[in-house]
Figure 1 (cartoon, rainbow, N blue to C red):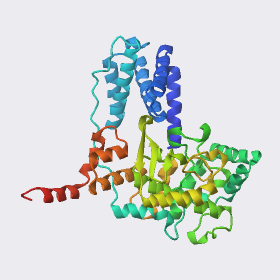
Figure 2 (spheres, rainbow, N blue to C red; figure 1 turned 90 degrees about the vertical axis):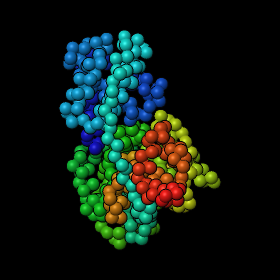
Figure 3 (cartoon, helix red, strand yellow; figure 1 turned 30 degrees about the vertical axis):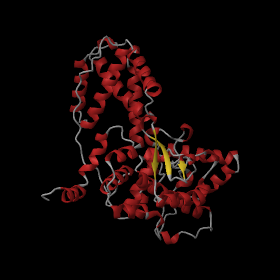
Figure 4 (spheres, rainbow, N blue to C red; figure 1 turned 60 degrees about the horizontal axis):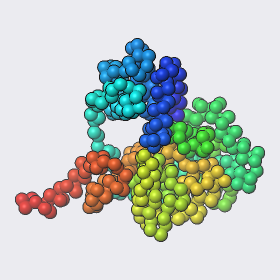
Length: 429
């Protein structure tokens, strides 16, 4: 995925640079508008800009040298071309939305004589039912990290004494050693792309899962430490040469790698409990700071789409997992650059969403469950809340959905609940 995203970004930049100056300037102004005025996330800005660059490149090839030449027919022909190239209905709907947003913005700003895309119709995306775990399967998954004999989803985190030593030296303020960690990560990422893939495959063969911080950029390239490669990149100390079974690990206290391994397990348990116990998005979970957790009220503050904040309650299992992580796990992984991040990667940086997805998928596969994503845990939490009698509006608030229609998809999953309600309420049941 990292390579695909990088190639896509380079392709968009090259096409952007080849646009006529008026079109190129319009793209840049629109990107600033989305980020500063609309307060869209970097991921949304990047997606919309890529769509707009593709649209204006298509318009330029059709003889449009400035925005005044953009028309509804041009936009429709662009979408038709995307369709013939195999774009999914959901992708076409998003690109149509990007075109409408840009057209309205350009018209308001006087760049377009009229809102050419105002009447542009979007293809209706196919609504598929979400993947949902049963309640017993969800419990099996969230308890997997602390089950006896369980290994961390990323073996290299448990077998990285070099990384543990670097963390300790960085915490002591040793500049050269602290820089070594970044240098090793950068040099290895530049020269061992094949090793990156091999590491993931080796971990899968070893324990049926994938790594936690296995060398990917933060989701969409955002959220990396200070703009560098996200923590968990393939570094010199991240080789998979130790591996082995869970019984081959030394007891806690025998060395730095063992303390890191135990800390990673506690981190994984806290992550899984948070995802299922609150139903938050994976990006929201990774963005939580220590100060966002109200232990007394058992409420966590998260920042969702559009920068909107909401308070989400969590239960006793999540509270116990968070307490153990903060007391026994986080101090082992923390370095000065960790700052206030609640969840950390094995090198001390903020845990990134890509790593969190690998953690969830790894534990699910190791537990004999379908390989799922963090979003499936969110789906499961919502479905189980509705099956337990929660109000649909309350679930909407917990999930941070701006529209009730987004929440209603979970009502289609709870057939048993609907049948029980019918039996209890209908006089002819």
